[in-house]
Structures are given as structure tokens and as C-alpha cells.
Amino acid sequence: MMLWPRMALENRLSGEDYRFLLREKNLDGSIHYGSLQSWLRVTEERRRMMERGFLPQPQQKDFDDLCSLPDLNEKTLLENLRNRFKHEKIYTYVGSILIAINPFKFLPIYNPKYVKMYDNHQLGKLEPHIYAVADVAYHAMLQRKRNQCIVISGESGSGKTQSTNFLIHHLTALSQKGFASGVEQIILGAGPVLEAFGNAKTAHNNNSSRFGKFIQVNYQETGTVLGAYVEKYLLEKSRLVYQEHNERNYHVFYYLLAGASEEERLAFHLKQPEEYHYLNQITKKPLRQSWDDYCYDSEPDCFTVEGEDLRHDFERLQLAMEMVGFLPKTRRQIFSLLSAILHLGNICYKKKTYRDDSIDICNPEVLPVVSELLEVKEEMLFEALVTRKTVTVGEKLILPYKLAEAVTVRNSMAKSLYSALFDWIVFRINHALMNSKDLEQNIKTLSIGVLDIFGFEDYENNSFEQFCINFANERLQHYFNQHIFKLEQMMPKACIQNTLAS
Image (cartoon, rainbow, N blue to C red; front, side):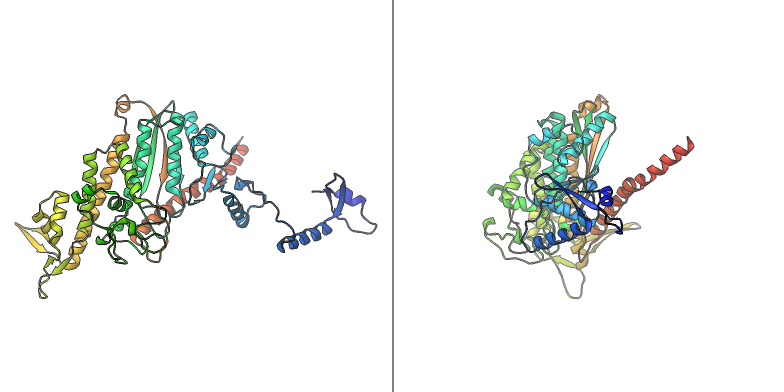
């Protein structure tokens, strides 16, 4: 439809004010003119008929770039995202920014065909895809000879970690045109290892990252992958000793308890998860005989969730650790330490007498198990758990802990052990990702960094970790606002000043 003021003037009756006519094409190709008022009446009648179901709903056009919306406001923006999501179009552009909506299911849009399809294509020429973002960063790095960075931001459960995995997969595939080998294989294997030790189930997300990570993929100037580096931030250590309602500890504990062989169960003194204080604090569920008896999503505070196969996940973790370079002996030492942490949490205390604040361990039979798994002397472990040493001028005092202090010390020991293990795993991964030969030759490198931090969280009771997580997200949002909006506003002013100066 078009507005034709000239035709309106010619068809205007004498004494009538100026008006607009609408020119429309009929189904047979003929042209007719109608007044705007009559068109509005017909449109309103059609709308009422569609609301009552007498006329079919029109096919709504969705826009793959929100900047292309003819009427851009909050309502049209959300409707466009919803319409695309209904048709399993989870990606939408906002200029050079990509919005990704978590479908909570696998979509067949990540196979090698899509890797090839989005290779060296200009942003916006094809349907929005996370591979397009990786491709733009990769070719911008090669053409401009400058390092690139991709920032992933969103609330908890929005799919940031999965998006990171897709980005890393595509960035390594571009280097080898779809074939992963050598250092690319190590980069891909590092993801499941970090997820197992650093992710956990929360109330809003079954695979929530409880740490932040920055993955830097290094390339030669020709575009071939040289290596990578992982930097981690703020592991949520408090989760190890306490979890809120309907939440779990780190994935690796459940993988180990479900997937360990009978030989490993005996060697590591493994029990069922209900028997560990660090895994069964809120509901105190009764003991079950095997993993086949465990509840699923229909019951809260479960040890498994719907669609999860912990035995398969443990096998996948073992393969990923092997890809990264963890030998069988090293893996056994890691699993032994994990079991020691779980048994350490079962140690409980009691006062020796009502008059004295000194304490004793209620279940001393746990001490030999923990000392064996940690490979330390039982006497030293006992002293560390019940007494503290104070050095004064010229002498050393050994003082007993109070009951609350001893529990805090036990939990602090467990958190320190797990934190040290996680740091060491990241160190070993970085060592495997480092190409020492190329470093010795001092080859000039380029890089693409991918930042995946924990999502914004807002619970009824928020811990200090939540404060740090949300503060980091606020700083990231501030950086985004500064570089997207402030700089865009400054560009026209700079152009005007340059024009006036010239």
C-alpha cells in the first residue's frame, strides 16, 4: 500500500478538506483507491474476526537482526525473539552482537556442514549462528593482525558454557578445516574436565559454572593453532561443604560414585552418596542399595537429574583426562583425593566433658581411611583437626579447638584440598596446551580469547560468592555500556569537530 496525495486531490469533493487515499492492488491485478478511514475500519474488522477465530492468523515475519525491526521497542523485540524461538531459531543478531536463547535440548546445527558453511562469510549474510561470531573473530585476527576477544554474558542457566564450547570447537576447526588433532584435541578435551570439577547443579541450572574462565587460543600468523591458555577466576569453594535446597556439590563427586568399578570402590573406600555429609545435608535421604534405585527429577534434592547418565559421564571424564594427558596413576591419585575430601566431611566432634571446652572425634574409625587416602600419618591428621599451635616468645603452645572452631577447621581443610586440586588441574591443562617447541623458536603469535564467567544470580539468601559473581557481572555490563553506547555517541561528535576543523 502507498499514500497518493495527488489522487486524493483529484477525487476530493468540492468543499471537502484534503485527505489521503490508499492505493491497493486487487487479486486480479486491478488497482483501486480507498480512503484511510475506510481502510482502518476494514483492518479493525479483520482483527476482530481473527481474534474470534473466523479468519486465520497472518504469518508473522521475523527479523534475524533486531536492528531491522520497523518499530523497535521492548514489545516488538521480545515478540520477535519469541517467534524465532518457536521455530527453533535460537540465535538473533543485534548488529554485531549475538543473542543466544538456551533451548535446553540439542539442535542439529553444529555439525561439520555448518562449520564449512560459515567459514569466511560476512556477518549477516547467513542465518545468525554462533559459528559466524567465531568466524568473524578468526578472520579479523588474520586480516588485521590483531588479537580478538569474545565476551559471553548472561544470567545463570542462559547457556554460556555451552556457547563457549561451540566457539572453541569452531575456532579449532577453522584452523584444521574441520579436523581436530594434536593441540586442537587437547583444547577440546579440556572442556569436559573443567566442567566436571568446576560445574554443579543449582536451583536454576543443572550445569552451572561455579568459576569463571578465560580461554585464550593462540595461532600462528598463518591461522594454525599453536596452543592455548586457561585462566580461572573465583572457584566457589563454599559449595564443597554446603549446598542450598535442590542443589548439588560438584559434578565429579557424583561421576566418581556412580561410575567407579568395584576395584576402585574398594581402593578408594567409596560409599553411597547418602552416607556423605558433604552430599546429603538438607534432606538426609535414606540409604539405597544401588544407583538404579535413585530418584529422578520428580523428587527434589535428588542425586541425579532427568536425562543424566552419571556412569557415561564418568567414562567421558576419563577419556577427556586421557586426552589432556593425565596418566592412569595420576587419575587414581585425583580420585583418591576426592574420596578423602568426602570422608573428611563425615568427621564429627564432641566435647570431652561438660566442664571442659576440649573436644574429641566422635567417629575415630574415619581417621585411618582419610589418612590412607591422603597418604599422611594418622597422628598428624588428628592433631591438625583438634588442636592449633601458637608460638609465643621462646615457647610453642598447643591449644585445643572449641567445637565450632573444629568444624570450621575441618571444612577449611576440605576446601583448601579441593581448591589446590582444581588449581593443579588447570596448571596441568595449561602445561599440555603449551607448545614448548614453538615457544623456544620465539614465533610471533596471535590470539582469540573467550571469556565465560558465572551468570548473574539473585537468591533469597545470597552468599559472599554471589556478591562477587554479581559484582563481576556489573563490571562487565559497565564495560559493555562504555564501549557500545558511549563510544557510539562520541563518534558523531568527533566527526562534527573534524568537519568544523577542516
